[in-house]
Length: 140
Image (cartoon, rainbow, N blue to C red; front, side, top):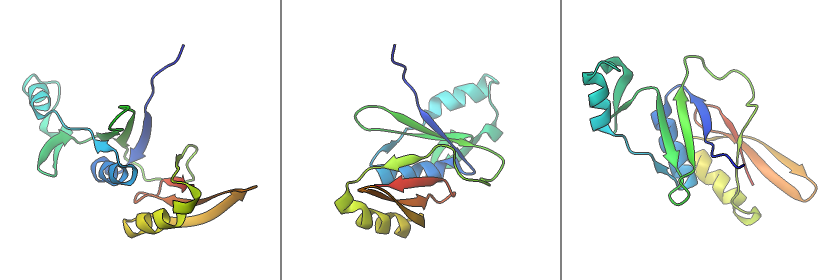
């Protein structure tokens, strides 16, 4: 049996981080259902403190998701109170092709990523970067 899944990434500020990753991967930020949020508040299931406005849209404060435009695969950015303090146990590999790695590293560092180091195993090489909140990922 195959299961559907999503990757969830802890974030201090999920909405800007979702924006950053959506642009990085060419994915889309999942649209907010403002009417649903307002109904949840009106029915007492949520409070105004559970929401915020991001780019002029009412959203849930605690999370934001991005989706692949064709497959619908989803990555959720979930707000957590603590800052990242150690290396990730899981990370994303962004595969762009060996001939595009340097250009992609330059593009991402210009957008706020931090270059960390290069790695190589046999003929395979990659660059490890950190997103604006410090989550490591590789470009290969």
